[in-house]
Length: 133
Image 1 (tube, rainbow, N blue to C red):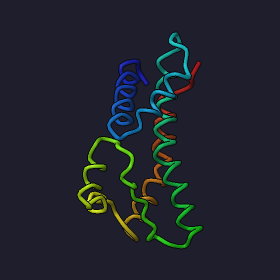
Image 2: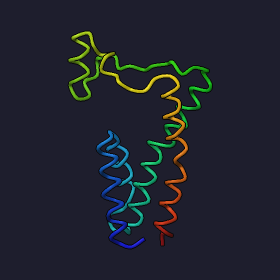
Image 3: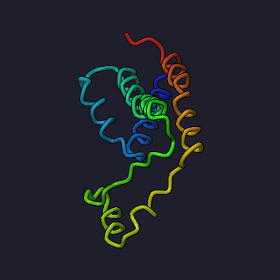
Image 4: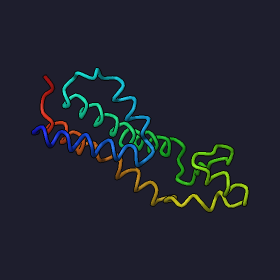
């Protein structure tokens, strides 16, 4: 992978992590590296962070669903934590459960299985990134 491709990968991974609520994973990955390290190392660290908050979490949730033997367990915010203001406002109006518009049951399981199967995409990116000297 050329230097400009590595930079594009870094920018893309940072954006994806931040835009999807995983800025903390990006921060941890970047903090673990010395500033003078190669950009290839940063790309690898961000790639690992992205994999852990997607594929690894999906596999953990899939294992939980299989262990519990149900697809109908829904985790909802209790309304006491103000993530962005919307949850508390909705809870005060009595509509917190209406805000949760995510796949349920078999559709949710299929979505999680699909995400859990994407490890090869991360492996391919690592191969394209090449060896880290």
